[in-house]
Image 1 (tube, rainbow, N blue to C red):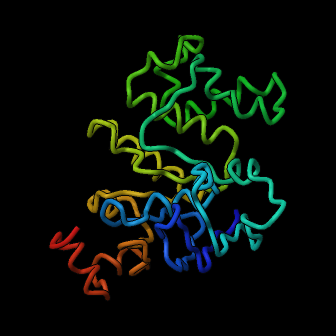
Image 2: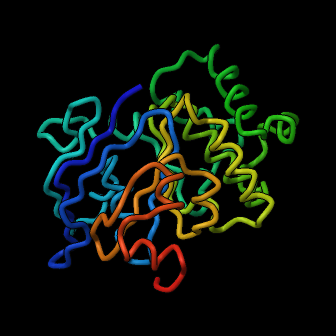
Length: 249
């Protein structure tokens, strides 16, 4: 399991600075929640952790993100490898336009997993997200035929199928009904220990349920961070206190 450390991270979109001197160490094998109001930089920080932020052609990044001591922004780094090691579960499920089976097999197949091992890989990861019993008899059916909640679990299985070390979740339950959302939360809890999980959420109650560690963002700055129990019971910063009391944001 690898460490993930952010040092002096700044991000600009054109002339607009989105992140300002972020310094943060992500605890290994735990769930870290990044919270704060809309537009505070939560998703930008999350996508900076595996260089997905660079998909915006107007972005500029300074500082470092260290994965096991190596800067993922250093010249010559294989970005594809970074994004394999640090996976992302997006806000809305985006199943690939192919079968349920091929959605999960897609990444391992690209990385050269032998055909004989693919079926076991697909079954293992569909079982891991509680989907195998629901789809085992229609693996060749289009993934787009699944419900939204099932699609998000399928996308989680697809993300895990390439065996990432770290999983990033960007508001991954926001588009789901309450039952499906709670199911994803339970799945993330079950992954803790085997994976390091980082979730962005605007839902304070969800952060209380999920997080072992919390980072609070405000206007592109990291205001306060620490173990969840201390963060929620005795926040130090007045801004954090006001946000948790829902007086602001």
